[in-house]
Image (cartoon, rainbow, N blue to C red; front, side, top):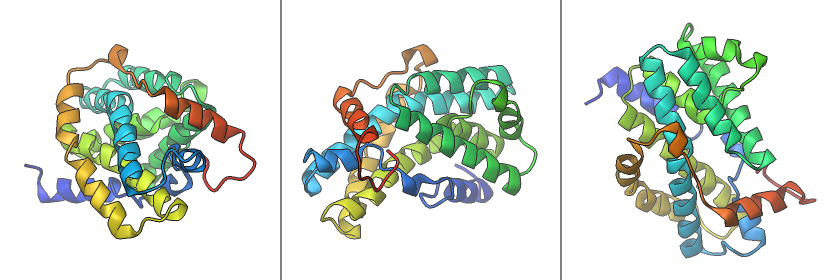
Length: 228
């Protein structure tokens, strides 16, 4: 079990309102609503589960790689994890999301935590491979003594919270509906972790072509509330 301090660090940096700019992104929901893929509570829950499932097998694997690399003190492996996440974002908006949130997390950690492996990684990111959010989160949690299972859960919680935070501004669901969906989706996190825990960076994949198409359409939309 995590210590009290570790649990509080998990709550702080895994909080859905932690200032990394997640509120500015819908993770594909905005265009799904416009195209009526999502139109009520039931379809919203299906969408959130699809997004979190895709996140587990792609970004979640990168997050675990970042966490394990940080524990080993291996900056090169962290860099390779960032590259693996970045090159798999085939849509420009999704690349922007993961890089912007990764940079914001690194900046916040630098100010709050101080010297860390994430700070070193962020310091050399301008020379090529950018910091990505899931890898940065894994590195930060490793630096803070938070275990990888808890780190994976926090990452998945953040993905679901991002979509549901956008949902209450896009469709006719209230905050209690959103919390009920979050509660249901969270029950799948342990199963996703068991499936992804032995995956390597080469195993990372997120086969969700319908989400990719919606993301591509969003990039050319004239009126948008969100950046993705």
